[in-house]
Each structure stands twice: as C-alpha cells, then as structure tokens.
Image (cartoon, rainbow, N blue to C red; front, side, top):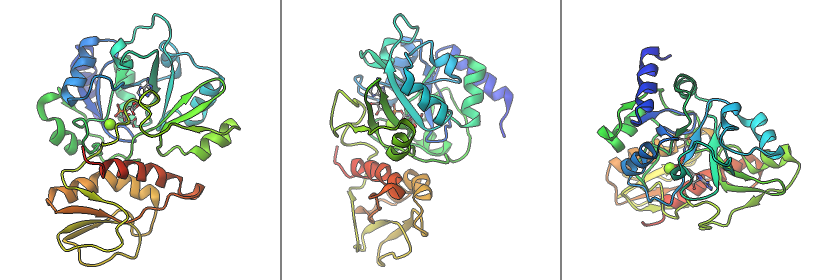
Length: 316
Ligand code: TXA
Ligand code: MG
C-alpha cells in the first residue's frame, strides 16, 4: 500500500525538524517533531494558528506515550480499549519530559493519541519521534480528508505530503480528559460518550462549549467554508448549495451532495469535510445543510457531526 523509501524520507524530514503531512484514520495531520520548539513553532506558522491552541502528540506505542504523560487507571483502560484509534487523551505531562512546552501551549497537560492508519503507524515506527500534528489545514478552515486537500491548504509550506487515500472516519478524534475521578469529553468524535461510559462504568462530564481552559482549541468558529452555512434546512433556495442527508431531499438547490442517502452516520462523517469543500468550490450564496439526528445512543456520532456543522455555521 505504501513505499518504504518514502516513509524513510519522511522520517528523515521529521528528524530535521521539517514538516510532513500524513494520513490518519480521522483526518490528515500536519506533523512535526514534538520535542523541537522550532518544529512545533513551524506548525503554528504554517497553519497561521493562534499560539494558545495546544497540539495533539502522536505516538506509535503506549510505552512511548508513557515517557511523556502520566497514565492513571482510567487512562490505561481507555488505551486498551481504543488504541490505536480515534481517541485522544489529555493527561498530566510527565515532569521533565522531553516534549516541547509549545505543544502544551503553556499548560501542565498534554494531549496524546496513537493513530490506527497503517501509513501513520509506519511513519511513527520509522521515525521513533513523538509527532505533534494538528489537522493539516489553515487555522479555522475545513479539515483535510484527502491528500489533495492538504496540498490546497498548505502547498509548499510542508516538506512532504504522504498520500494514504481518503480518511475512513472523516472527523477528528474524540478528545477526553481522563482524571482519576472525573472523565470529561472535550471534543466529540467517533468514540462516543456511551462507549466511554460503558467501558469505565461511570458518567462522563461534558466540557461547556466555549470553555477556554477545558478545550482551548475549540474556538467557536472553525471548519469554516467561504460560503455562509445555514443549518437544519428543510427547503432550499435556488442560489443555495445543499448538503443533504437521508432519502428525502428537498428539490431546487443549485447543487446537491448527499452525506448518506441511506441515512448512515458513519458514511456521513466520512463524507462531511470533503462535501463541504466540494460545495464551497461552487461558490454558492449559502450552503444549506439538512438536519442530522443526534438524539439517543444510536445517533451519538451525529453529536460529533453537528458539533462540526455548528462551528462551520458560526461566522469568524
Ligand atoms: O483526529 C485528530 O485528532 C487530528 C489528527 C491529525 O490526529 N488532529 C487534530 O488536532 O484534530 P488539532 O490540533 O486540530 O486539535 C487538537 C484538539 C484541540 O481541540 C485542542 O484544544 C485539544 O485537542 N487539546 C490539545 N492539547 C490539549 C490540552 N493539553 N488540554 C486540553 N485540550 C487539548
Ligand atoms: Mg483542526
């Protein structure tokens, strides 16, 4: 599926503190050596990202992660159930650990995850470095789920772009702060609150939206296309582009893409960012989005999708 020479060159670029974009199962990441202030600063610069926004550190193994963060019993349970995979844990930084302070944006905690994508795993294994990687888009824009999107967003601000095809999950990882006595969901994703509660046998807390300290990256406006976004549309105007969901689609839009004609939320998540990009490229007056169900455990992924859509609809 991929070429070893390319992985070696990418690992070499990371070792030289250059930036490498790579696929994960969620979205494409913009990777840099998480131990290097220069590399992490280059990530912020390439994304034009506000400096107070901390980054996720990607690792190839739990053993490696334990060099940088304190794993309590809850964190270990989560790791065993969901790693490698789309779950990020926010944990206390290990005292004196080698990670750049910039990845934590001045906080005592660090966000860590072990991605499941084989190409990401091959890169992490080859480089043996902890890799800081936010989504590979300019700050505030739609996250990339294909290598072509990364090229569009970052062009030559990145030394290499590894192509692993379209991302299977399509929305960013679930972010959870795992304390000894409290588990807080900081960002919804495809690992659902119900799954977390079942595994840990306790209720989880939800970070208040806009809670700057809990989830500093969760700016209210994010994932924004250029066109304004109108949510919960049940009818459309002829100058609007329609992002549909399910079998019953209102007629009359200038252009329509359907997240999932059969109403499947996994399919919808995987298509979300690509279709937003495709509709935006048509320069419509607005992007109208049909309602996506998010009540009940069977629709838990809808919470994550609606979270992203709400941010896309918030003007910068
Ligand atoms: O799926 C993903 O998580 C992708 C792929 C590339 O792995 N990465 C990603 O990174 O979405 P980014 O930087 O776009 O989002 C990081 C999220 C932000 O919401 C940020 O606030 C939160 O993680 N975060 C990072 N470090 C944190 C910390 N120490 N405390 C609280 N939240 C933190
Ligand atoms: Mg992002």
